[in-house]
Amino acid sequence: MIDQSQFTRRTVAFYTLGCKLNFSETSTIARHLQEEGFVRVDFNEGADIYVINTCSVTETAEKKCRYTINKALRINPKAFIVVTGCFAQLKPENIVNMKGVDLVLGSNEKLDMSFYHGSLEKLEKAEVHTGNIARDKRFMPSWSSGDRTRTFLKVQDGCDYFCTYCTIPLARGRSRNASIAETVQQAREAGNAGAREIILTGVNIGDFGQSTGESFYNLIKELEKVENVERFRISSIEPNLLTKEIIRFVSESEKFMPHFHIPLQSGSDDVLKLMKRRYDTALFRNRVENIRKLVPHAFIGVDVITGVRGETTEAFEETRTFLSSLDISQLHVFTYSERPNTQALKIEHSVPHEERKRRSALLHEISVHKTRKFYQQFEHTTAKVLFEEHSTDGVMHGFTENYLRVEHAFNENLANKIVDVGLKKVSTQTGNMTIEVPKNTSGRNGFRYSPENMQL
Image (cartoon, rainbow, N blue to C red):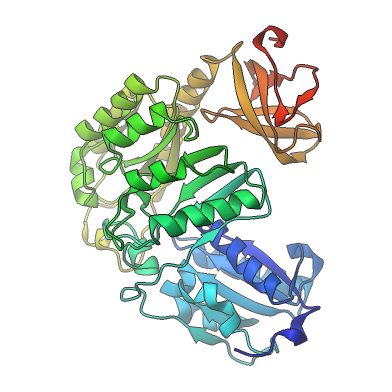
């Protein structure tokens, strides 16, 4: 590692593609470089070094990567360009010849960037450092910063499931994690930095403990004891790993929010088998019903992929029927795209691209209907909202405990505060919940209001 004192005045900017896990890792890279003396600036300010953290989930990964590189070079043609992340791990040969790229780092190498960036002088040919991720047992902890309100804490990485359509195990390796004690310490550090809410993220977080002999259930029990963080949320968790004890724990918890995000992917058991998913629709329905029994007001988000190989017209109709019958809050609909080196390519039945789009649109309609119905249940009630610090066009946003997104005219006194509010109606323009904030003085620990002061 070289002497970093020469970089004291160097500036660095970041661009993150893909998931919340990528955002947490980008933040950690940023903190490391800032500790070396780099100054973080906005992407459009003309940085000395650009770090582009890529995704591999969709077929547009290479296009988005190339576009972002070109944008950085238009802003500063002399910038040192680093490309890292899942696409860099899977396809370094596609990146190395892209004009202007100086350094390509794989999935685990990215958090050791200090060892690779050298003198930051532009290179004629990019250097590539990508290890054998399948054999790499290191876990690189990270958490997002920059927005004190909601922080993404990486608790797990990699996946042992190898679903037929997915490249993530190839890009991130096998399932691994830090110990519960180390993860709890990371949460405390995020809390010390001002985080009011922490979202647990990873590739397959329910599989936590594979590398330490612990369990996700025991992890959340210990996180509940972290004094300086008021809210936790569980991000996407596989239905077969979302146990009844986890659901019951959330139903009784003071800190874990009534919010579940569960990947279904298909409502056809035949397609689930083709995908090599580890559950069937009966198990999935059981999990949803169990949540509704113990946490009736919980937000339940569901991932679904349409247009996958093997999804016949009949199988798609099964999915539509199944989703329509579930008491869920929202769908996250993904249109399938073929990924190189996946087992799904061996499945003969392929859905035409136009038909994939049509099916996606139909599932989006189901989602819009269910989300509005879920929101409308809570019109003219009261809720606790954690407001974000930033605003858009004079409007600030926040989330209730059960993940209703609310909007209100910007008020800096509400930023990063948990406030009791009156929920009014769902906005026909934005789909968010409009609210009233009572005019009252703030309490010692933020805004506190009694129900009789609510303006509904």
